[in-house]
Image 1 (tube, rainbow, N blue to C red):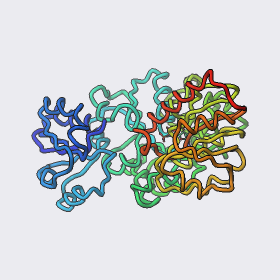
Image 2 (cartoon, rainbow, N blue to C red):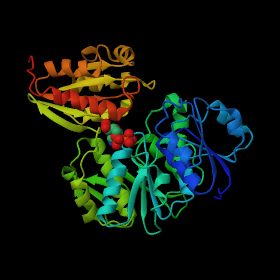
Image 3 (cartoon, rainbow, N blue to C red):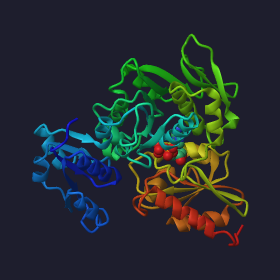
Image 4 (cartoon, rainbow, N blue to C red):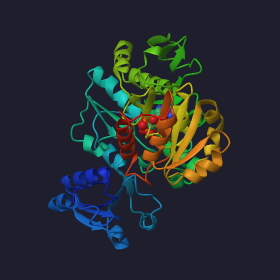
Length: 455
Ligand code: ADP
């Protein structure tokens, strides 16, 4: 892709937009950045861009700015039905995402992971396993470092382990991982993708460019992920918690095993009980990682040792503290109903659950049976509280707490021994993001130390 001297517009000045703008400029493009947020909000990034000779349009998008370009690089946070993008698309202007841009420059092997839930955990785990095998490895994408920022240090004999979201995949065309993983496809982000079909189609772009030389790792226990096999040209490897698979990773007699092909013998990798992460969903993440790592050439013993050392990523069913016999878990990253249900299912019962935030139009009714079975009380917070109440009323006692602090105080006061989790919605109504919400939760919990409980 020749971009020297080309006029390129980067839409959206998030982490990846910033990295893309700087990269393009260093490649000799004439770069403009456009963001709907005001110059005040963007103040911390603007001087560095101007210094680099990058033009900045803040506080809105100008259609003319869009029309003057040779290429548009759109950030994952910007909907592709933004009116200015729709307009210029009609004129045939290429519109790509930062992952697609990076794909043209990245050297070496790519292992890419997508799914509705479990991406960060599985991506981090794969990264750790490959590093343990002494393979030159970089980890990035929707986690930590944008893909474009990995380009400079990428090498022909190395691996880029990438977490890719549906928003990022929506704008990929040539992106071509040699190992692709789809963990699961359950309803999420329907506020932006419109329908489940659109959302699933975006995820399936992860293998759109794959050939029979590439591998696609799919969850045999997930209907939508499973059905993707019919549209793939790659070699399919399955992972399953429930059954033995022809080719891939599975659980048999409490042992995770890998089978390289239908003809080969199953090779034991590690015992399920050796996995240090909580919950059946994490067994799925480990199965996917075992499969991907074996395909990347890592031996079973190295995989086992790396999995056994792996700690939960922050905000993912992260243990916070035990106070007055009550265990507190931070699951702020569970920002959809399926993730929240998997987290609840990781505990036998006695759960005081904090639920709420800005909702993405999910159906909380599907939680009813599980709530009745395992949850003592739900404490609602944020904008989704009313809807949650309507959907789960009668299944479980509900306390309308309003804020996270109030919810922790109310739950902490009555919980005797058990767990407190927080989960299920995105966080943008009361917090900057899920990390912020998770940190506030942890600080609020820690502040309870020394306080007397009413129980
Ligand atoms: P993602 O990056 O896809 O959001 P994470 O690894 O950050 O996924 O995990 C987010 C939350 O999703 C976890 O806190 C847990 O509640 C839930 N989760 C993790 N793995 C899975 C899985 N394989 N299936 C369903 N839910 C999962």
